[in-house]
Image (cartoon, rainbow, N blue to C red; front, side, top):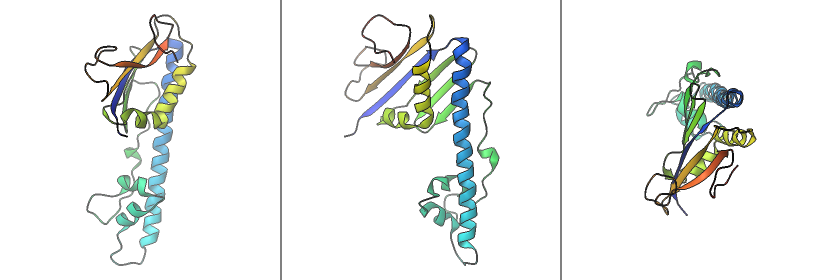
Length: 194
């Protein structure tokens, strides 16, 4: 059954926890980008080999129809073109682990702000957007790291969400919005702490 939903929030960190958290998230993004680059290079080499000596062979179609390489098709093909293009390393940039960054991942946007030592998270709004966002390996690591942090006074935060069954306003508790996750020192009220 479909369910249109969203989730967003922010979390503030202590200096000691911030560096480790930010580094872990960015290293995971860099690891995934490196894997995508290697897959694109493998797909390019395999498509070149498959089409060698064949007239009119569409390497782009071969990559898109391949069970192993279809995910890499977006990096080495162009719409309506039968050719494939060698993947460029600069299309998969490695992010520095020491700078503020905005990460746009499939169903989610994560902002890591060094000045505020804060992370903001937004899953966007779509059919099953929260579930798909939580399946992302970077988001899974993010929640794993958040649960492992030792929170201190002045740190922590709250994620608020809603779905098509509880829609009205965008404030926590107002018109059906609800807290989906809460991190930090115990707060008053009926809040689930992770």
